[in-house]
Image (cartoon, rainbow, N blue to C red; front, side):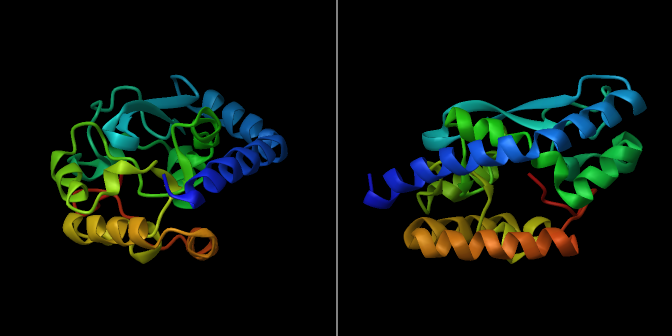
Length: 200
């Protein structure tokens, strides 16, 4: 394990804990709005692959109807707008639906910065990441690929960016990714729904 990985794990836990303490009022408000506007649970759980392709369940605020086909990326749905709730559209556009992944970070399933966790059945992306060693580190809440195109990237290029992150990973590179993520979220850049999206 690289020396920075030990520092990174410690920082992940501390920052996630601070984030949870500061953001819990927003968690509560979002939970109430979701529950009062559509049927179903507040949180959405989905099987993903973590470090060394170990399975875990990622957490998100539910943005889709409960009859949405399970374990299917949004870009493969014939009409994603049919399944996404009105509140869900706002949460996805602002990336607020990703906030519960702070819990995944606290549990040690994820890191703040790293490749976005692939669905357990996204064989094409998983195979491409194997070429670059990108499946050997913890997946992240955001990553180098996300700040370089997000949903607009082809799988091969996305995997190469994930590999680029693995080879360059250090404290200042993580700061750069985090800062770029904030700007992208504020601008809602790179978010696509439907068959042309590669969202994970």
